[in-house]
Image (tube, rainbow, N blue to C red; front, top):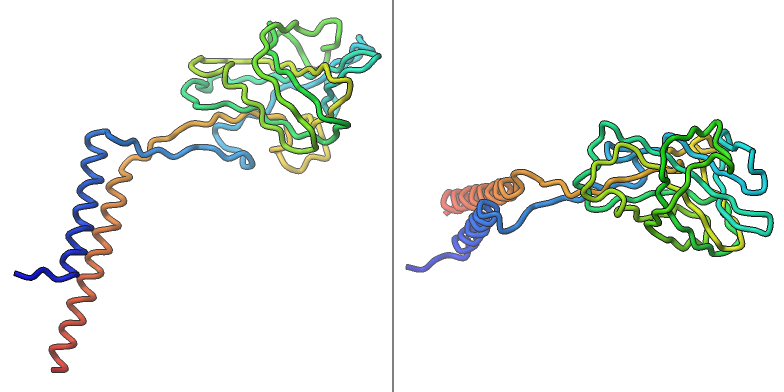
Length: 239
């Protein structure tokens, strides 16, 4: 018995669909989609709750209402930025990667930033200054910045596998220069993504992916078979 090309095509599609179902049932492959969108607020997006900077030169001054944050080092002393995030009751576990994102508006030369975790969250942006700011000892990452742009800093080591109700990042630089980035108090900012924020990047399992593919393939087969039968009828009627 000779098998037509159309029958072979239909058989291959059905075999492929059946294989997808078996792969999913046996757990050989997990159908995942990465949840990440840097420029649209969503459930895994967290804007800073408090942010400010302190000045070694003006050690009793407070800059909590400033629209800009400053990091740098000069002969007159350092500028250090503090960023506080509260995640309660959000689940901070299970992320593949966690990024701190800032928007740099001014930089004089390439700078190496170092991110620490503060030893305490007992501070307030309306009263913090150089003299009373929390100490920091846990350095988690360094990042080189050379232009005005969005800067993504991988802070995963502070989160992965842990439930973190709150955290304060301290950003410093020993480079003899300065860098300015947006604060959440910045009135000129028209886009929320320019505020300092954190994104949790997760893999989300897509249920029924194989079923969706199988349905689409079977639908295609049905349409093709229908077209073929309709064409055959027309040929018979004409003949």
